[in-house]
Length: 402
Image (cartoon, rainbow, N blue to C red; front, side):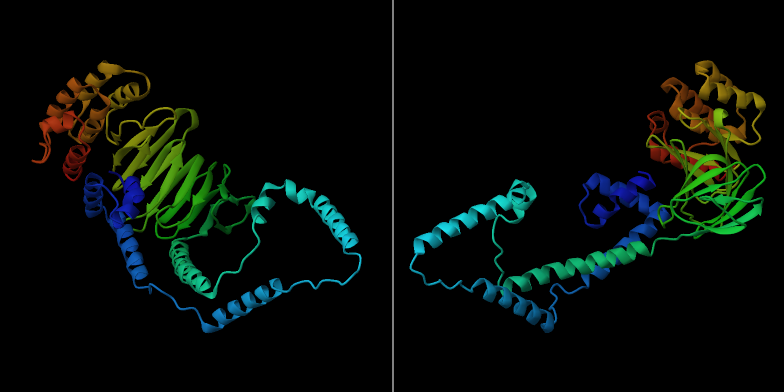
């Protein structure tokens, strides 16, 4: 289970509404993911505070007296009867009364044709007793307090505007050229061929924006810092161990997992992702892909993320991976990749396993095992059937040794 799935299920997990299988997956994830554990702690603290609110709230006496007084006025007005006018010609009066009623109904024909009005005026208003008013207040006030408390909790998570400083030229924020400005949620940041900018992202770090770039700040909030990249080049430099930042490009979500990385959109050729430290996670079609430090990855629209390649990989290996990813290289490309892979390319082979046939998985498993034996909790059968936990544990075992 990945972080996004855990965020969706976290509320039900705290409320103990999940089935046993999903509950175990969430527990396993938050034990190993500091970011999701932090969200879990925030939510539990929030609900613990709500539990301390009194079950019943007694409204002030002044409010009850005022409501009671208003109700009494309405009741007294409705109880006033119209006095009968003494007359000898009562039949004539009755006819006049019926005539006036028919005229009144005719004048209100527009109201009669409105279904909404019919529902509103179907029954005359009957004031509720004072006891009912108390009951309504006792029900509504706690809900209002909870809603207000959640609003404050949610509002505290917002962390915009972001600061933008011009490094050269004149970056433009939603049509505002300036040497230094603020970037608000929903606004665009544009640079031309002569301009660059540095963006200070609260609780994340710095994002340097290169020339000819177009970015949109979709969300600026703890847990959901999201920027959509239309074009250009960015470099993300962290100041936090667990930053919370996502770059969206086409159908790819590039999630910062503590890694310093560069992303350059080359249009027709796709985008190039280069990870300089730690690692970056890519979400695509609900699948997760990991790119480790000192590795690059090609992101081309209409294709899954390319197989990560070590920065020191040979040109021949890069060409074989390019052929496999985007040119239907097939089995011949896989065989060439395996034959060209060196020890530093073992994470490339591991990333290749989910994309090849079952027979090819067995060959790759043996090739990696010769250099980096899998930990005891990882089995050949588990890797062949693409067990996600086993693939990740083997990735961790190899990653720290490279």
